[in-house]
Amino acid sequence: MLPAIQTAENWQECLSDLITDPRELADFLQLDQRLDPAGEQALAQFPLKVPRAFAERMEKGNWRDPLLRQVWPSFVEERTAPGFVADPLRERHYNPRPGLLHKYRGRVLLIAAPHCAIHCRYCFRREFDYRENTPARRDWREALDYIRADASIEEVILSGGDPLALGDRQLRWLLESIARISHVTTLRIHTRLPVVIPERVTGGLLEMLSSCRQRVVVVVHCNHAQEIDRRVAVALGALGRGGAVLLNQSVLLQGVNDGAAILSELSKRLFAENVLPYYLHLPDRVAGTHHFHVTLDAAEAIVGELQASLPGYLVPRLVREDPGAPAKTRLV
Ligand code: SF4
Image 1 (cartoon, rainbow, N blue to C red):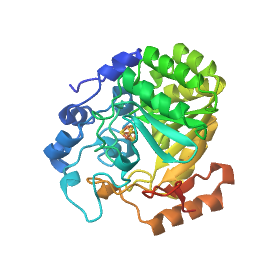
Image 2 (cartoon, rainbow, N blue to C red; image 1 turned 90 degrees about the vertical axis):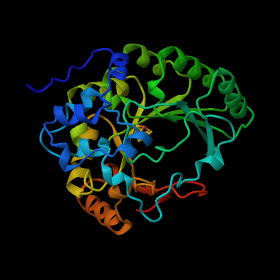
Image 3 (tube, rainbow, N blue to C red; image 1 turned 90 degrees about the horizontal axis):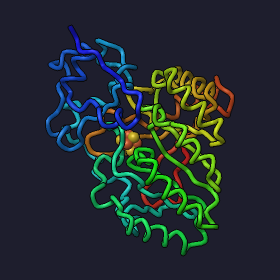
């Protein structure tokens, strides 16, 4: 008898009970690991982490399942590929304080939490030094002083890791500290938690966000319509009713969502939950992720098909991050 996956009601229990062993995931999905063995080096460099609720949305017996492909630590990650490097965006160069990135004019990004609820194999921060960038309260104060001292900073982006992986007490302290900086008018939260552990959208979190002085924008990260089940829909609905502007960013990934029909379905599914598709990222050239790569020509063709079949507000902007550029490079 195959093991059943039990999901917890409490988000912190979900977060502390992730699937981290490839054998457990393969057994649950009735997959023969000999067909795509997990790579030991890949696992050592970037361990497996999958919330049980996310694994439940995967199709059993299907190695090509688009959710599984995003998290499976395949041995192919261990092959090198020309041009794929550890820090393609050279983020270390824009890191003036621990936990703070200042790449673009008018906005800064705080690495609010040093971990995520899921490890996406294509992640551009899979080699980011989170240990160096896990601020203690003292470091937070330095980062906040930096923001306070620069009146041109109007927007603070909480990123990660995943900022909603922080407990409510820490998150509240951070939000209240940012709220006291008068020139910051917008708070943006980049998070995958409402999709991968929708239980995170608690009454306490909604109350915290709705009482923010700043305009709150929540940018979720969803790559495929199969990621949105009933519980995710409820969580997104609650965030929207709580007053947050809801946007989505996806990464265009070979074997996951590199087709116009797949992305069209995703846009419609998101819109049904009041989320607008915002960015479609061309994947960054991070070491170990070459098997997800989609060429620019292919990406442009896919977005062209979306433009021909969807209203403009459902077509995400195809973008790429170029190191040192003053903003994301818009491709279509
Ligand atoms: S949730 Fe975001 S930051 Fe975390 S591993 Fe996935 S892509 Fe990277």
